[in-house]
Every structure is written in C-alpha cells, then in structure tokens.
Amino acid sequence: MICNYICSIMYRTGIIDYLIGVLMFVKIDFSSEIPIYTQLKQQIIEGIADGSLNEGESLPSVRQMAEDIGINLHTVNKAYALLRDDNFIIMDRRVGAVINSKHNMKLEDYDDKFVEDIKPIIAEAFCRGMKEEEITRKIQEIYLKFLEA
Image (cartoon, rainbow, N blue to C red):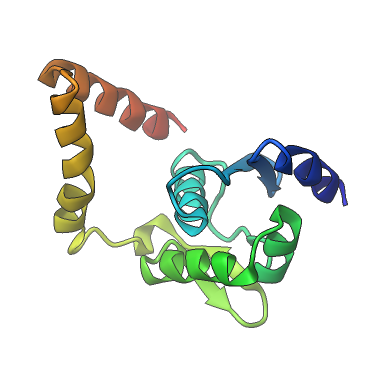
C-alpha cells in the first residue's frame, strides 16, 4: 500500500502524513506534547469542518489506520470513541466509522466546553502580548475558512 511506504519514510522525521479518503491528510507529530489520539480527533473534526470529509464517508477501520500510521490500535480506537461520543461519527459494525450529519452534531451543552477549551489558548495569547483585535481577527479568519468550504 502506498501509505505504508509514505508513512514509513515520514516516520523517521517524527511526523506522519496519512491520507484519509481522497482529499484529506492527517498529520501526526510523534514529538508533540499533544497525545496522538487528540491530534487524530482534532484533524478529523477539521476535515469535517473544511469539507474534506463529508456526511456518509467511511473512515479507515481502526486496525487499518493503526497499521498504516504505525500506532497502537487502541490509540485510534480512543480517537474514534471520542468522535462518536461527540456525534462526529457513527460506529456501525457492518460499515465501521462513518461521518455523521452536521445536523446531528448538537450544539447543546457545547457552550461550556467551548469556553473551557479556548480559555487557556486566549490566556496564553494574552500573556504573550496579543491584543484583543488580533485574537478576534485570527478567530474570524479560521471561522471564514470553514464557512467557505
């Protein structure tokens, strides 16, 4: 498989690019402080947001992704379980992990989690001297990229 070859070359650098579907690469940085399952989860969510992954598309099986990337299958399983718990994917024994409809990705109870997740990022930006306007502009740029997709 091509990905096994690409992944084995990039593994030496500590970063792996992994192709999901036709349009989306997942970049895993083994030297990052961010756990691999979190990197995987975040990048799949970004793929859904930017249109690289669409409703009804299948993700690789837990075993296949783990093998291709060269990580433990429990790591992929944890990322998929978190995505399932947050309604980003549906797990079906017959077809595996499938991207859920955006309509099923509920906003209920997300407001508190959003504030909890973004608060330390904004605190760090504030401590490093970023101005409110710059933080707001960067958030708007990111949001518009997803909106345009």
